Image 1: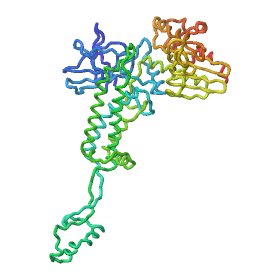
Image 2: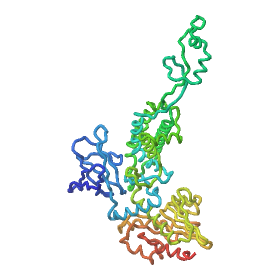
Image 3: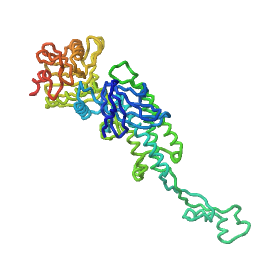
Image 4: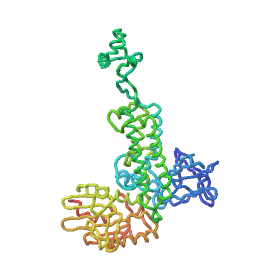
Length: 522
């Protein structure tokens, strides 16, 4: 359900009264301040993506950064209890990229690799379970799952503990005759070896055979206990979730410190609340492990018998389900509660440019054998690589390769005559006779003045980057839409100056197509 949270518009700007979930409060926009009205009652504390918003003159003032998507918020009482949760729908800057276009762009990125969209901005998106990744920001994705499913796992454990699964265990013991209900061959063999018992059975009451102590019989005893396969599996899951919580706690503490940046939202203000969530869950699981019935379990282990037993009991099946959801890794899915944090809108645009150019190149050169490599797989240090190999052409599409400074060893032939540089996208093509490369830098900007300022980057890349001592053929800026600086888009200008801008669409840019046209037939 989508609701506009706007309640009034005045000279101070838009004022909002939020609707709790399942409503989604629409109308927010990146880099646009919103004034949020507190609900009646209080005192209240408002946290947006775990960051406390300070009350200013009776209202909360919040300005989203460079991100778009759904942002979670919590309304807390004065003693820290959760009173309400909200979803704030932040739209992209309408002057750069329309909402529909942004959503289509994001879908393209997620369709190729959801991890290209993972970041640490407050905006979130549904996530799932398709792959693993080793980026440090995986801690944020892991935390988002533990925060949602960890409390549910704890609740499921409490429910299972109310009626724990019991296992029948047989042992032998000695009982007085009046308590014996069943004897077996072992009992009879024991009795035949007892002279006192034989005398009492035979009626011999002489002093010599009279038993000095009450007669007890060795009998089989069946008893119920909790140290079975199902409970051992549950304890193993408890230890696994607790290890994940402690690992995430350490990873969150080691995330990069906040740097001075006008385009990223700092993490420091959001981190204390997130660490507190993990600490509470860890303490609660520790208490459960020390309580009945789990403390009676002798060892944690997951076995086939244990998993079958979990599936057969609804309360135990809930424990397993919540543990699995809290532990799983990956991205891509459709759970309405399983979310990942997104990158800033400008970084998502960079990723989309890489994805779109990769798709266009694979369509333009279908004869090549295309392979995709993840982080650290390419010698250039690129984050992601598309490599196309053919009998007469080798082409590499690289996302943020490293051009080391001139006095450092070349990285796959890449060097910069000045300081180290990492352009957004580099395309290299090589045959037996020649090689060349093109540099593309994505800029999530549109206005004339802004584009002219960003052209300095294109000039730097054109003049400073080298591949095996060769200069780039072109250094172009990729834009979300056509620029008012029209001459920068003209083919003649770009061929002469080897710089310019391109509004990336559904076709291979003209200069790139011209550079690769000779290889299409092969």
